[in-house]
Image (cartoon, rainbow, N blue to C red; front, side, top):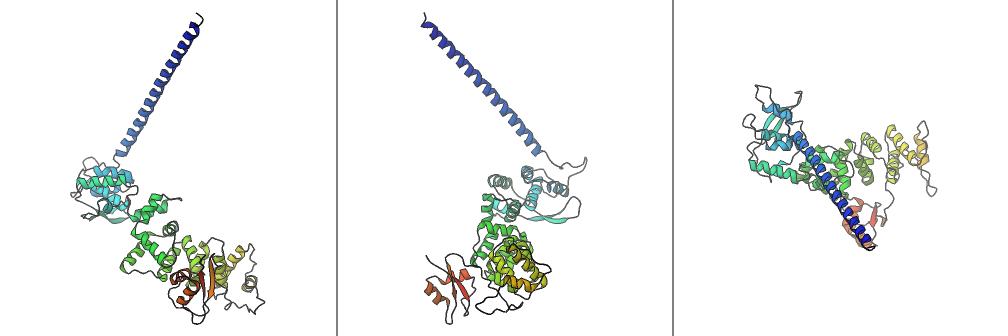
Length: 415
């Protein structure tokens, strides 16, 4: 009798636990069903809002015109316009609402129509567009005669491509994107002809830039600079150092910090000899790093016959690098005595127009300095140090193989 009591107790306990588990499972299922219902209801409401036409209703008794529809569509976001690519309601002149939506997608959102339709031949027309206040009027490209299959191809392309934009559209997205940028966006832009034109120019002139640095430079300027570079390289491929310099100066005019950094750190002699005072002031404004490059640049300016404004700005940079306060009023001779001390091994007379400090930054690791002697040429030097002529030219940014005695070259040292 006593052995049955524990057995009955255990059975009752197991039965209670089983019932509790069943009840708990039913409650979980009920909660999950409620959650799914709420989510689906919200999604349906959201979808209904997206599909709701915006400013497409014409006044009672009036027919909506192409101009009216373009004004309404021009302010719609990208996703809203995509929804309207399925609207086959006719407007005017044989055009449909979906034609207007496509025109706004390509003109205002840089939708890549040619890539979406695999560069098929398109009938391209234009229609006059004016904004809401009528102040701006432009010829808007429009593409009549597209078939239903082509519009379905456009929708598939928009849904499958993460960045279904032209290169110009990708450029504007990069300008708006904070760091770190979307790697898919960077990759899409890096495959463009425009990016490759700039990349090749820097690579062939001895400055192989990383993708991040080059995109920073390009995004600090205007689209027109990059577009003009691409067009000029198509007509006459110019991979000269002068072309690279002109490009960097164009970006400097756009207040590009990256262009200032590249110019000061790679082309110091050109800056000191060829740039005007306005460009020099811009460089000093936008180069924000404290480095040996800035030290050599400022000293080169002080030793040149520049204006007082340039001398004072160069002196201010040197005193800031030295963590000192520049004495007032400004005295050029005092600055020279502070930053150009006399060398006891040889007499150095400090003169404002003849003292020229070395503009070569300190040597990088694994390089040595060689002074060209009479009779030297690149072939002899390359054999002497067992490096290629191309390496010597690239390291020293040489435009030709001509050398003058006394010129100093950096030679890569093989370990």
